[in-house]
Image 1 (cartoon, rainbow, N blue to C red):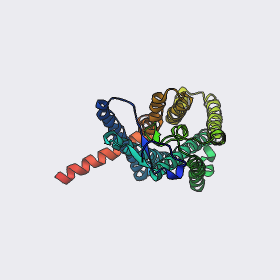
Image 2: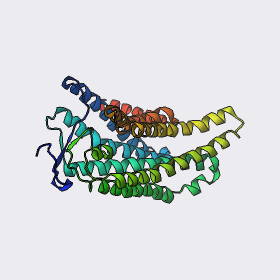
Image 3: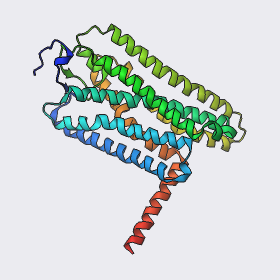
Image 4: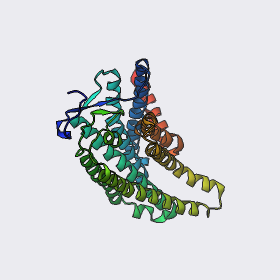
Length: 318
């Protein structure tokens, strides 16, 4: 099947992922960069999940949410990175129609779930700092599971709507996607359907996803800041802020990259790809680093885990 037009999307059996428009000589460097980032994502997020599951001191709502965040980061980056790395060595750079649907669905599922989970984590910090005496009662294990399940449910509903809406478009203009993965905006560019309703529904979905999560995060931190300012001790203020700095860092990186990507004009596709790279791969790589470097509990658990393995290896040798 060539690049000529097709009458509707049902005749499209595959797409071509253009990727980054660079000289062929640079493909190996991009492959090594993607490989390095993906390796760090695997090590960082799997390591974070293992530490949280094995250290009983981290059996708290905050780390339950953090473990789920690492799980989400691990999987949505895995939806993108392997295929992108394969395409650096592939001449056809093709992805099947079903593969493209699956990639868009899973990525949308996990990225939306992460947005809701970050809002849940902000609410958790609000309860912990503003109502510490009621924290264990209000943030019960049952509620924590419900909040995480609700995040996945919202992500799933959003993903089903976004994916089904995107792939009911007719792709008769081209099958060449000017991106390194299947995303909604590049797919719109190769569609010959009327995009007015599609764009309106997409805008509505983004609004009901982004606005509520940002509002929850902002309102939570307004209350947190007002509570912290009432603490007279400078040491006490630092301690409270240290528990929030990691979460604020993660929120800033993710939403900063997303807004940068969506505010980038379509006339600069390569800039849009760089922005997409930031929140599809760089953010999942940075999240475990931010939490491990800024969180004393995680650093202590990591140190004890390494010490335990070191001494076990010595005793084994002896």
